[in-house]
Amino acid sequence: MRRARLAAVLTAFVLMTGCASSGSSSSSPEETTTTTTTAVTASAPETATLPAIFLPTAEAPTDEGALALGAEALFNASGGHYPVTSGTRVRFLPSGGSFHEALLTELKKAERFILMEYFIIKEGEMLSPILDIIREKTAQGVEVKIIPDGLASQSGIDEVLRAAGAECEPYRGSETEGLNYRDHRKITVIDGRAAFMGGVNIADEYINAISPYGHWQDAAILIEGEAVRSCTELFFEQWRNGAELGSCQSYLDASAPVDGDGYVMTFGTSHFAGAQNARAVYLELIRRAEKSLYITAPYLTIDAEIERELGNAVERGVDAALFIPGINDKQYSELISRQHCRNLLELGVRLYRYDPGFIHAKVTLCDGEAAMVGSINLNSRSFYLDYECAACLLDCSAAEDIAEFFSALREECTELSLKDIPALSPAEMLEASLLDRLAPVM
Image 1 (tube, rainbow, N blue to C red):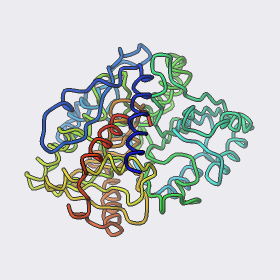
Image 2: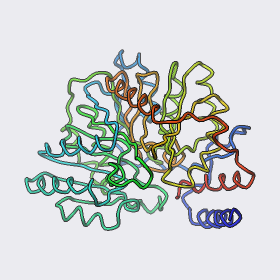
Image 3: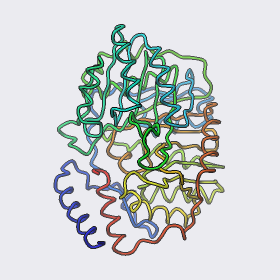
Image 4: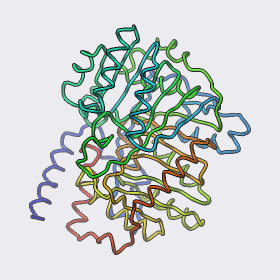
């Protein structure tokens, strides 16, 4: 059985590397660093030239309060395309169910436009009431534009959405991108007033209407005010491959500051950016930690530098902990992540297994005051291939709710030790290494 499985992996590796012509076999300098603690490495594609559709680079933060909180470092790490805002209010939504409830409430308030961009959209209990609202709102003259990923979403979902009255343009990738680069973002923008961002797609497992992997734990945020503008920009970067980005000013101008607390930077990532900004933001949050660092990690595929920085955080006295699934929705992911888990435990990083099922949330909390919530996984695919989105929160009251989320999560987890994670055999090591390189196209 083991030989047959390994042979299948080798065959798949040859086939996939033969058809992946977009440069996905090259590695970043950090990933080729020699280390005795990393047996599995990820691969990064060659970066393309930044396309002209992107709006001009934003101004770096100058507010003394934001600078004192390290906003400039996060701004630079994210690529400098999206501003740090103070006129923004954020509400943390600790589950797919709470996200769905809030989404329906806000969609019903729409008066001008609704923009939705999701990796997965499928028919079912979650989508059904959304379709009802779309029918009602389009009948009232509200514009509804929706981008489902053309490969990950349900086949024919574009026709379902159009039948409800929405404009729908599935993202299928450009000729230069091929099949590897997917739109993994999860965004809704309503009238430029409110936006949602997080790990939750539009499918029934996300609200536990079905449970193929035990209890599905996810999270999202509701954003109101100035930072919604960047969410609108992210949507139009992808809408019809950016063809309308130059004429979307009225949608951007619909956003206005509100009374909020702290600072918020909503931002997007893509392989076009060239600076690996998703990875850079994670590294910035890891390096700034002084007391505590908590990260949910559904798909743990990291390089030697990230492992090393997590270990350095522990050496500084930081309580560094990663939360991983008890049941994974991708069987190969467990094998890929096993060596990383052993490496991290040896470095003193704490690992918590979510026993009820699958944790899909992408949430980071640093020292109880700096947080990131979005679609970005702590893995190579999010770092080097997919279009992603997230929000960095600095000194926002929502961080208190995120801290409570991690506290409650820990109660449902088992803390792991090295004896809980079997060492990889030589054959498994080879298989994991090959799967690690295949993971971005699986």
